[in-house]
Length: 143
Image (tube, rainbow, N blue to C red; front, side, top):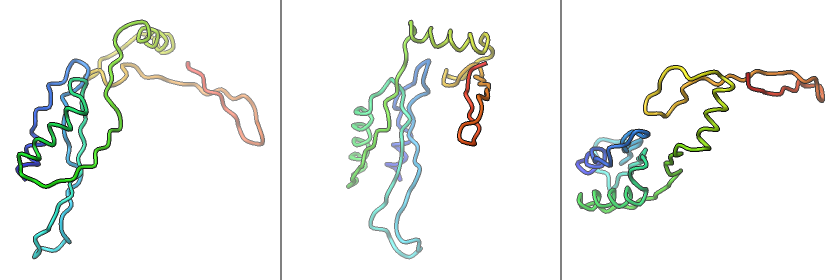
């Protein structure tokens, strides 16, 4: 347990204006046979890291393995990377997207937390274009 505590408590980074600090979540711990009188020979732990642009996947892997090594554990890790965090810098692309959304939905209103969510709702109207093959066909167009 001290090694799992160390993994969860590790200060991976401080985050930045666009991302929360990197954090590790333990999702599953499995050991033994669901009986109380047997000491399990192994344990399986599933965890994931939600990481910012302040640290790389390779750095996370190295630090995780260093913590496991410090705990004196024998381990086998199956790493899976679903995607790297990214940040679209201010510029022409971002301005074009913001301009298109504002032209469709109106000016910005309200705020957001850590810039992870849209500031304004996007509504799409449905327009019927007739029947095709006995079913209703709909086109979607922005308001």
